[in-house]
Image (cartoon, rainbow over all chains, first blue to last red; front, side, top):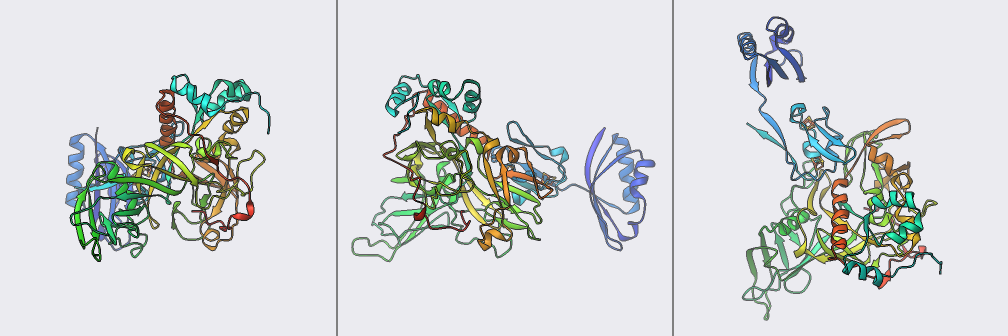
Length: 136
Length: 402
Ligand code: SF4
Ligand code: SF4
Protein backbone atom coordinates (compact mmCIF):
# COMPACT_ATOMS: atom_id res chain seq x y z
CA UNK A 1 0.00 0.00 0.00
CA UNK A 2 1.22 3.44 -0.94
CA UNK A 3 0.82 6.34 1.49
CA UNK A 4 0.72 9.97 0.57
CA UNK A 5 0.30 13.06 2.74
CA UNK A 6 -1.51 15.80 0.86
CA UNK A 7 -3.30 19.07 1.50
CA UNK A 8 -6.80 19.26 0.02
CA UNK A 9 -8.19 22.72 -0.67
CA UNK A 10 -11.95 22.89 -0.99
CA UNK A 11 -13.71 25.73 -2.77
CA UNK A 12 -16.68 27.08 -0.76
CA UNK A 13 -19.35 25.26 -2.79
CA UNK A 14 -17.80 21.88 -2.03
CA UNK A 15 -17.66 22.24 1.73
CA UNK A 16 -20.94 20.45 2.28
CA UNK A 17 -20.15 17.62 -0.17
CA UNK A 18 -19.32 14.17 1.23
CA UNK A 19 -15.95 14.10 -0.53
CA UNK A 20 -14.14 11.95 2.00
CA UNK A 21 -17.00 9.50 2.04
CA UNK A 22 -16.80 9.09 -1.73
CA UNK A 23 -13.04 8.66 -1.62
CA UNK A 24 -13.47 5.79 0.78
CA UNK A 25 -16.63 4.26 -0.64
CA UNK A 26 -16.19 4.70 -4.38
CA UNK A 27 -12.42 4.72 -4.74
CA UNK A 28 -11.44 2.36 -1.95
CA UNK A 29 -8.67 4.54 -0.49
CA UNK A 30 -7.86 4.81 3.18
CA UNK A 31 -8.29 8.39 4.37
CA UNK A 32 -6.66 9.50 7.56
CA UNK A 33 -7.55 13.08 8.44
CA UNK A 34 -4.63 14.75 10.14
CA UNK A 35 -5.87 18.28 10.30
CA UNK A 36 -8.90 20.13 8.99
CA UNK A 37 -9.98 23.74 8.85
CA UNK A 38 -13.43 24.15 7.45
CA UNK A 39 -15.55 27.29 7.71
CA UNK A 40 -18.87 27.72 5.92
CA UNK A 41 -18.70 29.90 2.77
CA UNK A 42 -14.91 29.96 2.73
CA UNK A 43 -12.13 27.85 1.28
CA UNK A 44 -11.54 24.89 3.50
CA UNK A 45 -8.37 22.89 3.86
CA UNK A 46 -7.59 19.46 5.12
CA UNK A 47 -4.34 17.61 5.64
CA UNK A 48 -4.92 13.94 4.93
CA UNK A 49 -2.93 10.82 4.51
CA UNK A 50 -4.24 8.75 1.61
CA UNK A 51 -3.44 5.08 1.38
CA UNK A 52 -4.10 2.52 -1.34
CA UNK A 53 -2.64 0.88 -4.43
CA UNK A 54 -1.01 3.26 -6.91
CA UNK A 55 -3.92 2.67 -9.28
CA UNK A 56 -6.57 3.51 -6.71
CA UNK A 57 -4.71 6.60 -5.60
CA UNK A 58 -4.44 7.80 -9.16
CA UNK A 59 -8.17 7.34 -9.70
CA UNK A 60 -8.91 9.17 -6.46
CA UNK A 61 -6.71 12.06 -7.54
CA UNK A 62 -8.55 12.23 -10.82
CA UNK A 63 -11.87 12.38 -9.01
CA UNK A 64 -10.68 15.19 -6.75
CA UNK A 65 -9.33 17.12 -9.71
CA UNK A 66 -12.61 16.88 -11.61
CA UNK A 67 -14.55 18.05 -8.60
CA UNK A 68 -12.37 21.13 -8.34
CA UNK A 69 -10.58 20.21 -5.12
CA UNK A 70 -7.03 21.50 -5.11
CA UNK A 71 -4.52 18.78 -4.25
CA UNK A 72 -1.06 19.71 -3.11
CA UNK A 73 1.63 17.58 -1.60
CA UNK A 74 2.21 18.42 2.09
CA UNK A 75 4.68 21.16 1.42
CA UNK A 76 6.07 21.26 4.87
CA UNK A 77 8.15 18.70 6.56
CA UNK A 78 9.39 18.85 10.09
CA UNK A 79 13.02 18.00 10.55
CA UNK A 80 14.32 16.97 13.96
CA UNK A 81 18.05 17.48 14.25
CA UNK A 82 19.11 14.70 16.53
CA UNK A 83 22.62 16.07 16.96
CA UNK A 84 21.28 19.38 18.27
CA UNK A 85 18.72 17.78 20.58
CA UNK A 86 19.83 17.57 24.21
CA UNK A 87 16.78 15.56 25.29
CA UNK A 88 15.26 18.20 27.54
CA UNK A 89 11.75 16.94 26.62
CA UNK A 90 10.29 20.48 26.47
CA UNK A 91 8.76 19.72 23.07
CA UNK A 92 6.72 16.79 24.35
CA UNK A 93 4.09 18.84 26.10
CA UNK A 94 2.72 20.63 23.00
CA UNK A 95 2.95 17.72 20.52
CA UNK A 96 -0.62 16.51 19.87
CA UNK A 97 0.26 13.27 18.08
CA UNK A 98 3.14 11.98 20.20
CA UNK A 99 5.39 12.23 17.17
CA UNK A 100 7.89 13.44 19.74
CA UNK A 101 8.19 10.84 22.45
CA UNK A 102 10.46 9.88 25.30
CA UNK A 103 11.73 6.62 26.67
CA UNK A 104 11.22 7.14 30.42
CA UNK A 105 14.00 4.82 31.56
CA UNK A 106 16.76 6.53 29.62
CA UNK A 107 14.89 9.85 29.15
CA UNK A 108 15.95 9.82 25.50
CA UNK A 109 13.71 11.75 23.12
CA UNK A 110 12.88 10.45 19.66
CA UNK A 111 10.91 11.73 16.70
CA UNK A 112 8.55 9.68 14.57
CA UNK A 113 8.16 11.36 11.19
CA UNK A 114 5.19 9.16 10.33
CA UNK A 115 3.13 10.59 13.15
CA UNK A 116 4.06 14.21 12.59
CA UNK A 117 1.31 16.34 11.09
CA UNK A 118 3.50 19.42 10.71
CA UNK A 119 1.36 21.47 13.08
CA UNK A 120 4.49 23.39 14.11
CA UNK A 121 3.50 23.56 17.76
CA UNK A 122 6.84 22.18 18.91
CA UNK A 123 8.92 24.45 16.75
CA UNK A 124 9.43 27.51 18.86
CA UNK A 125 9.24 25.61 22.11
CA UNK A 126 12.58 23.90 21.48
CA UNK A 127 15.18 26.04 23.27
CA UNK A 128 17.96 24.46 21.22
CA UNK A 129 16.47 25.17 17.80
CA UNK A 130 16.67 21.45 17.08
CA UNK A 131 13.34 21.33 15.25
CA UNK A 132 13.02 22.97 11.91
CA UNK A 133 10.32 23.22 9.32
CA UNK A 134 11.32 22.67 5.72
CA UNK A 135 9.37 23.92 2.74
CA UNK A 136 9.50 22.18 -0.59
CA UNK B 1 33.38 16.67 66.08
CA UNK B 2 31.19 13.74 65.16
CA UNK B 3 33.05 10.45 65.22
CA UNK B 4 32.71 8.12 62.31
CA UNK B 5 33.61 4.53 61.62
CA UNK B 6 35.03 5.44 58.27
CA UNK B 7 37.53 8.29 58.11
CA UNK B 8 39.27 9.08 54.84
CA UNK B 9 41.23 12.15 53.86
CA UNK B 10 41.46 13.90 50.52
CA UNK B 11 45.12 12.92 50.39
CA UNK B 12 44.35 9.23 50.82
CA UNK B 13 41.68 9.30 48.16
CA UNK B 14 43.95 11.21 45.77
CA UNK B 15 46.73 8.66 46.32
CA UNK B 16 44.31 5.93 45.27
CA UNK B 17 43.20 7.94 42.25
CA UNK B 18 46.82 8.40 41.17
CA UNK B 19 47.39 4.67 41.38
CA UNK B 20 44.25 4.02 39.40
CA UNK B 21 42.73 2.20 42.36
CA UNK B 22 39.96 4.56 43.39
CA UNK B 23 36.44 3.18 43.40
CA UNK B 24 34.14 5.70 41.74
CA UNK B 25 30.37 5.47 41.33
CA UNK B 26 27.74 7.94 40.13
CA UNK B 27 25.16 9.51 42.42
CA UNK B 28 22.57 7.16 40.93
CA UNK B 29 24.66 4.05 41.47
CA UNK B 30 25.44 4.89 45.11
CA UNK B 31 21.75 4.79 46.06
CA UNK B 32 21.38 1.12 45.36
CA UNK B 33 24.76 0.33 46.88
CA UNK B 34 23.88 1.97 50.19
CA UNK B 35 20.51 0.22 50.21
CA UNK B 36 22.14 -3.15 49.78
CA UNK B 37 25.26 -2.80 51.92
CA UNK B 38 24.47 -0.04 54.37
CA UNK B 39 26.12 3.34 54.81
CA UNK B 40 29.31 2.21 56.55
CA UNK B 41 30.13 -0.57 54.11
CA UNK B 42 29.36 1.68 51.16
CA UNK B 43 31.56 4.42 52.60
CA UNK B 44 34.38 1.90 53.03
CA UNK B 45 34.21 0.51 49.53
CA UNK B 46 33.56 3.70 47.55
CA UNK B 47 36.00 6.60 47.33
CA UNK B 48 34.22 9.14 45.15
CA UNK B 49 30.64 9.76 44.06
CA UNK B 50 30.17 11.76 40.86
CA UNK B 51 27.20 14.05 40.24
CA UNK B 52 26.01 15.88 37.17
CA UNK B 53 23.59 18.48 35.92
CA UNK B 54 22.85 19.88 32.48
CA UNK B 55 20.63 22.92 32.60
CA UNK B 56 20.23 26.46 31.34
CA UNK B 57 22.29 28.59 33.73
CA UNK B 58 21.62 32.23 33.04
CA UNK B 59 24.23 33.60 35.39
CA UNK B 60 27.14 32.55 33.21
CA UNK B 61 29.65 34.22 30.96
CA UNK B 62 33.27 34.39 29.92
CA UNK B 63 36.21 36.71 30.39
CA UNK B 64 37.95 37.03 27.06
CA UNK B 65 41.24 38.70 26.28
CA UNK B 66 41.40 39.04 22.52
CA UNK B 67 44.98 40.29 22.32
CA UNK B 68 46.46 43.54 21.15
CA UNK B 69 46.20 44.95 17.70
CA UNK B 70 48.82 47.13 16.08
CA UNK B 71 48.48 49.96 16.97
CA UNK B 72 47.05 48.95 20.35
CA UNK B 73 43.48 49.71 21.38
CA UNK B 74 41.75 50.42 24.68
CA UNK B 75 38.45 48.92 23.67
CA UNK B 76 35.43 50.74 25.06
CA UNK B 77 32.69 49.00 23.13
CA UNK B 78 32.97 45.46 21.87
CA UNK B 79 30.73 43.10 19.90
CA UNK B 80 31.24 39.43 19.10
CA UNK B 81 29.07 38.24 16.23
CA UNK B 82 27.12 41.42 16.94
CA UNK B 83 26.50 40.48 20.58
CA UNK B 84 27.71 43.26 22.91
CA UNK B 85 30.33 42.33 25.49
CA UNK B 86 31.16 44.45 28.53
CA UNK B 87 34.40 46.31 27.94
CA UNK B 88 34.71 48.41 31.06
CA UNK B 89 37.88 46.52 31.97
CA UNK B 90 41.53 46.81 30.95
CA UNK B 91 42.36 47.43 27.30
CA UNK B 92 41.46 44.17 25.57
CA UNK B 93 39.60 42.33 28.33
CA UNK B 94 35.86 41.88 27.99
CA UNK B 95 33.15 39.94 29.77
CA UNK B 96 30.59 38.28 27.55
CA UNK B 97 27.38 37.43 29.39
CA UNK B 98 25.26 34.56 28.10
CA UNK B 99 21.89 36.33 28.29
CA UNK B 100 23.05 39.25 26.14
CA UNK B 101 21.04 39.17 22.90
CA UNK B 102 22.33 40.22 19.49
CA UNK B 103 22.48 44.02 19.17
CA UNK B 104 19.76 43.95 16.50
CA UNK B 105 17.51 41.36 18.16
CA UNK B 106 13.85 42.43 17.96
CA UNK B 107 13.53 41.24 21.60
CA UNK B 108 9.91 40.97 22.66
CA UNK B 109 8.64 43.58 20.20
CA UNK B 110 7.02 40.78 18.26
CA UNK B 111 5.78 38.86 21.26
CA UNK B 112 6.92 36.25 22.13
CA UNK B 113 10.42 36.97 20.85
CA UNK B 114 12.57 34.11 19.63
CA UNK B 115 16.01 35.27 20.81
CA UNK B 116 17.79 33.13 18.27
CA UNK B 117 21.32 34.25 19.00
CA UNK B 118 23.06 35.67 22.04
CA UNK B 119 26.09 35.46 24.32
CA UNK B 120 25.52 31.78 25.08
CA UNK B 121 25.51 30.98 21.38
CA UNK B 122 28.75 32.94 20.87
CA UNK B 123 30.37 30.86 23.61
CA UNK B 124 29.12 27.66 22.01
CA UNK B 125 30.44 28.77 18.61
CA UNK B 126 33.81 29.64 20.13
CA UNK B 127 34.26 26.27 21.85
CA UNK B 128 33.13 24.60 18.61
CA UNK B 129 36.20 26.16 17.00
CA UNK B 130 34.26 28.60 14.81
CA UNK B 131 35.61 32.05 14.08
CA UNK B 132 33.49 34.88 15.45
CA UNK B 133 33.43 38.43 14.16
CA UNK B 134 34.98 40.88 16.60
CA UNK B 135 34.33 44.60 16.46
CA UNK B 136 35.92 46.95 18.99
CA UNK B 137 35.54 50.71 19.23
CA UNK B 138 37.60 53.08 21.32
CA UNK B 139 37.98 56.80 21.93
CA UNK B 140 41.75 56.63 21.53
CA UNK B 141 44.43 57.66 23.99
CA UNK B 142 48.10 58.63 23.72
CA UNK B 143 49.14 55.12 24.68
CA UNK B 144 46.32 53.31 22.84
CA UNK B 145 45.75 55.33 19.68
CA UNK B 146 43.65 52.77 17.76
CA UNK B 147 39.97 53.67 17.52
CA UNK B 148 38.51 50.75 15.71
CA UNK B 149 39.32 47.10 15.27
CA UNK B 150 37.47 44.59 13.19
CA UNK B 151 38.54 41.00 12.62
CA UNK B 152 37.50 37.38 12.77
CA UNK B 153 38.89 35.54 15.74
CA UNK B 154 38.83 31.96 17.02
CA UNK B 155 39.09 30.76 20.58
CA UNK B 156 42.61 29.50 19.88
CA UNK B 157 43.73 32.95 18.79
CA UNK B 158 42.56 34.58 22.00
CA UNK B 159 45.15 35.18 24.69
CA UNK B 160 42.80 34.01 27.46
CA UNK B 161 39.27 32.75 27.65
CA UNK B 162 37.89 31.94 31.07
CA UNK B 163 34.39 30.76 31.74
CA UNK B 164 33.28 32.49 34.95
CA UNK B 165 29.74 31.89 36.10
CA UNK B 166 28.64 33.87 39.16
CA UNK B 167 25.66 31.64 39.93
CA UNK B 168 25.31 28.05 38.77
CA UNK B 169 24.06 24.78 39.99
CA UNK B 170 21.16 25.80 42.20
CA UNK B 171 20.46 23.46 45.07
CA UNK B 172 16.85 22.60 44.30
CA UNK B 173 14.59 24.73 42.15
CA UNK B 174 10.98 25.65 41.57
CA UNK B 175 8.52 23.62 39.55
CA UNK B 176 6.87 26.29 37.44
CA UNK B 177 3.17 26.32 36.62
CA UNK B 178 0.93 29.09 35.37
CA UNK B 179 -2.44 29.59 37.01
CA UNK B 180 -3.36 32.64 34.95
CA UNK B 181 -5.61 32.55 31.90
CA UNK B 182 -3.02 33.18 29.21
CA UNK B 183 0.14 31.43 28.05
CA UNK B 184 3.21 33.02 29.57
CA UNK B 185 6.82 32.84 28.42
CA UNK B 186 9.35 32.47 31.20
CA UNK B 187 12.92 31.38 31.81
CA UNK B 188 11.28 28.11 32.77
CA UNK B 189 9.91 27.79 29.23
CA UNK B 190 6.42 28.48 27.89
CA UNK B 191 3.75 27.78 30.50
CA UNK B 192 0.23 27.15 29.35
CA UNK B 193 -2.72 28.69 31.20
CA UNK B 194 -4.62 27.01 34.04
CA UNK B 195 -1.65 24.81 34.91
CA UNK B 196 -1.50 23.32 31.42
CA UNK B 197 2.04 22.11 32.02
CA UNK B 198 4.70 22.12 34.71
CA UNK B 199 8.40 22.68 34.05
CA UNK B 200 11.20 21.76 36.41
CA UNK B 201 14.94 21.95 36.02
CA UNK B 202 17.28 20.00 38.21
CA UNK B 203 18.49 16.48 37.67
CA UNK B 204 17.21 15.37 41.11
CA UNK B 205 19.27 12.64 42.75
CA UNK B 206 22.14 13.28 40.31
CA UNK B 207 22.27 16.99 41.05
CA UNK B 208 25.49 18.11 42.79
CA UNK B 209 24.18 20.04 45.78
CA UNK B 210 21.48 17.48 46.57
CA UNK B 211 24.26 15.02 47.32
CA UNK B 212 26.04 17.27 49.78
CA UNK B 213 23.17 19.29 51.25
CA UNK B 214 25.22 20.74 54.15
CA UNK B 215 28.31 21.50 52.06
CA UNK B 216 30.53 19.11 54.00
CA UNK B 217 32.86 18.71 51.03
CA UNK B 218 32.09 21.47 48.51
CA UNK B 219 33.80 24.83 48.80
CA UNK B 220 36.37 27.20 47.39
CA UNK B 221 38.86 25.10 45.47
CA UNK B 222 36.68 22.09 44.72
CA UNK B 223 37.75 20.79 41.31
CA UNK B 224 34.78 20.08 39.05
CA UNK B 225 33.66 19.03 35.57
CA UNK B 226 32.71 22.25 33.81
CA UNK B 227 31.46 22.48 30.25
CA UNK B 228 33.40 19.40 29.20
CA UNK B 229 36.65 20.61 30.76
CA UNK B 230 38.05 21.09 34.23
CA UNK B 231 36.83 23.91 36.40
CA UNK B 232 36.73 25.01 40.02
CA UNK B 233 34.28 26.23 42.58
CA UNK B 234 35.70 29.68 43.32
CA UNK B 235 33.16 31.14 45.72
CA UNK B 236 29.61 30.70 46.98
CA UNK B 237 27.40 31.78 44.09
CA UNK B 238 25.37 34.98 44.13
CA UNK B 239 22.13 34.55 46.09
CA UNK B 240 23.68 31.55 47.90
CA UNK B 241 21.07 31.12 50.60
CA UNK B 242 21.73 28.14 52.85
CA UNK B 243 19.12 29.29 55.37
CA UNK B 244 16.15 28.15 53.27
CA UNK B 245 13.80 25.79 55.14
CA UNK B 246 14.86 22.17 54.91
CA UNK B 247 12.91 18.96 55.15
CA UNK B 248 13.77 16.43 57.86
CA UNK B 249 16.35 14.72 55.68
CA UNK B 250 18.27 18.01 55.43
CA UNK B 251 17.36 18.81 51.84
CA UNK B 252 16.36 22.44 51.24
CA UNK B 253 12.76 22.80 50.12
CA UNK B 254 13.54 25.58 47.66
CA UNK B 255 16.43 27.21 45.81
CA UNK B 256 19.17 27.43 48.44
CA UNK B 257 22.89 26.99 47.83
CA UNK B 258 24.59 28.09 44.61
CA UNK B 259 28.10 27.90 43.19
CA UNK B 260 30.32 30.41 41.49
CA UNK B 261 32.48 28.43 39.10
CA UNK B 262 35.38 29.09 36.77
CA UNK B 263 37.43 27.21 34.24
CA UNK B 264 39.55 27.47 31.11
CA UNK B 265 37.11 27.87 28.22
CA UNK B 266 39.75 26.67 25.79
CA UNK B 267 39.44 23.11 27.10
CA UNK B 268 35.66 23.01 26.99
CA UNK B 269 33.34 21.52 24.41
CA UNK B 270 30.20 22.54 22.48
CA UNK B 271 28.55 19.35 23.64
CA UNK B 272 28.56 20.60 27.22
CA UNK B 273 28.10 24.32 26.64
CA UNK B 274 25.02 24.83 24.51
CA UNK B 275 23.38 28.13 23.54
CA UNK B 276 19.69 28.34 24.42
CA UNK B 277 16.82 30.44 23.05
CA UNK B 278 13.94 30.65 25.49
CA UNK B 279 10.82 31.79 23.69
CA UNK B 280 9.59 35.15 24.97
CA UNK B 281 12.29 35.26 27.63
CA UNK B 282 15.74 35.52 26.15
CA UNK B 283 18.90 33.63 25.43
CA UNK B 284 21.14 31.76 27.78
CA UNK B 285 23.65 28.96 28.03
CA UNK B 286 23.09 25.40 29.10
CA UNK B 287 26.00 24.21 31.15
CA UNK B 288 27.13 20.68 31.89
CA UNK B 289 28.50 20.67 35.41
CA UNK B 290 29.57 17.81 37.66
CA UNK B 291 30.98 17.84 41.17
CA UNK B 292 32.86 14.88 42.65
CA UNK B 293 31.95 14.12 46.25
CA UNK B 294 34.75 12.50 48.26
CA UNK B 295 33.52 9.66 50.45
CA UNK B 296 35.16 10.91 53.62
CA UNK B 297 32.86 9.03 56.01
CA UNK B 298 29.51 7.27 56.29
CA UNK B 299 27.62 10.54 56.70
CA UNK B 300 28.55 11.42 53.12
CA UNK B 301 27.24 8.02 52.00
CA UNK B 302 24.02 8.76 53.86
CA UNK B 303 23.43 12.03 52.01
CA UNK B 304 24.48 10.67 48.62
CA UNK B 305 21.94 7.88 49.02
CA UNK B 306 18.95 10.22 49.28
CA UNK B 307 16.88 9.37 46.24
CA UNK B 308 14.33 11.11 44.02
CA UNK B 309 11.44 9.86 46.19
CA UNK B 310 12.78 11.90 49.11
CA UNK B 311 13.75 15.03 47.20
CA UNK B 312 10.97 17.58 47.13
CA UNK B 313 10.62 20.61 44.89
CA UNK B 314 8.29 23.58 45.49
CA UNK B 315 5.51 24.22 42.98
CA UNK B 316 5.29 27.93 42.18
CA UNK B 317 2.77 29.91 40.13
CA UNK B 318 4.62 31.99 37.55
CA UNK B 319 1.37 33.52 36.33
CA UNK B 320 0.88 35.68 39.39
CA UNK B 321 2.89 34.79 42.49
CA UNK B 322 6.38 34.79 41.01
CA UNK B 323 6.22 38.11 39.16
CA UNK B 324 4.45 39.68 42.15
CA UNK B 325 7.08 38.26 44.51
CA UNK B 326 4.55 36.85 46.96
CA UNK B 327 6.73 33.87 47.81
CA UNK B 328 3.67 31.59 47.86
CA UNK B 329 4.31 27.89 47.32
CA UNK B 330 1.43 25.80 45.97
CA UNK B 331 2.79 22.53 47.27
CA UNK B 332 5.70 20.12 47.13
CA UNK B 333 6.32 17.35 44.65
CA UNK B 334 9.01 14.68 44.61
CA UNK B 335 11.51 14.36 41.79
CA UNK B 336 10.45 10.73 41.41
CA UNK B 337 6.97 11.99 40.54
CA UNK B 338 8.27 14.74 38.26
CA UNK B 339 10.40 12.29 36.32
CA UNK B 340 7.34 10.15 35.65
CA UNK B 341 6.12 13.04 33.51
CA UNK B 342 2.86 13.66 35.33
CA UNK B 343 1.80 15.10 38.65
CA UNK B 344 -1.49 16.10 40.26
CA UNK B 345 -2.15 19.66 41.26
CA UNK B 346 -5.41 20.28 43.07
CA UNK B 347 -7.03 17.24 41.51
CA UNK B 348 -5.83 18.09 38.01
CA UNK B 349 -3.31 15.98 36.13
CA UNK B 350 -0.44 18.09 34.83
CA UNK B 351 2.30 17.08 32.36
CA UNK B 352 5.78 17.84 33.71
CA UNK B 353 8.90 18.20 31.66
CA UNK B 354 12.41 19.10 32.77
CA UNK B 355 14.22 21.94 31.10
CA UNK B 356 17.43 20.21 31.96
CA UNK B 357 18.59 17.08 30.25
CA UNK B 358 18.80 13.95 32.32
CA UNK B 359 20.50 12.16 29.44
CA UNK B 360 23.33 14.68 29.43
CA UNK B 361 23.46 14.96 33.24
CA UNK B 362 24.10 11.20 33.32
CA UNK B 363 26.74 11.64 30.67
CA UNK B 364 28.49 14.31 32.78
CA UNK B 365 28.49 12.11 35.90
CA UNK B 366 29.72 9.18 33.82
CA UNK B 367 32.54 11.15 32.17
CA UNK B 368 33.69 12.52 35.49
CA UNK B 369 33.64 8.99 36.89
CA UNK B 370 35.80 7.78 34.00
CA UNK B 371 38.28 10.65 34.40
CA UNK B 372 38.74 9.92 38.09
CA UNK B 373 38.92 6.16 37.66
CA UNK B 374 41.58 6.64 34.99
CA UNK B 375 43.65 8.79 37.34
CA UNK B 376 43.26 11.90 35.17
CA UNK B 377 41.31 14.02 37.65
CA UNK B 378 42.31 14.61 41.27
CA UNK B 379 40.06 15.96 44.00
CA UNK B 380 40.60 19.54 45.11
CA UNK B 381 40.40 20.02 48.85
CA UNK B 382 38.49 23.22 49.57
CA UNK B 383 40.40 25.95 51.38
CA UNK B 384 37.02 27.00 52.75
CA UNK B 385 33.67 25.23 52.61
CA UNK B 386 30.55 26.97 51.36
CA UNK B 387 28.94 28.96 54.15
CA UNK B 388 26.16 27.08 55.87
CA UNK B 389 24.59 29.22 58.52
CA UNK B 390 24.27 32.88 59.33
CA UNK B 391 20.71 33.29 58.12
CA UNK B 392 20.69 36.99 58.84
CA UNK B 393 23.26 37.70 56.17
CA UNK B 394 21.29 36.82 53.07
CA UNK B 395 19.07 39.55 51.69
CA UNK B 396 15.65 37.97 51.13
CA UNK B 397 14.94 37.52 47.45
CA UNK B 398 11.19 37.00 47.90
CA UNK B 399 11.07 33.96 45.74
CA UNK B 400 12.92 35.65 42.90
CA UNK B 401 15.67 33.16 42.48
CA UNK B 402 16.31 33.00 38.76
S1 SF4 C 1 4.99 19.57 14.18
FE1 SF4 C 1 3.28 19.06 15.55
S2 SF4 C 1 2.98 16.88 15.26
FE2 SF4 C 1 4.97 17.32 14.37
S3 SF4 C 1 6.38 16.90 16.04
FE3 SF4 C 1 5.91 19.07 16.17
S4 SF4 C 1 4.19 19.23 17.60
FE4 SF4 C 1 4.36 17.07 16.99
S1 SF4 D 1 12.77 20.60 22.95
FE1 SF4 D 1 14.42 20.42 21.45
S2 SF4 D 1 16.23 19.81 22.63
FE2 SF4 D 1 14.44 19.48 23.92
S3 SF4 D 1 13.94 17.32 23.57
FE3 SF4 D 1 12.69 18.52 22.13
S4 SF4 D 1 13.93 18.60 20.28
FE4 SF4 D 1 15.28 17.93 21.89
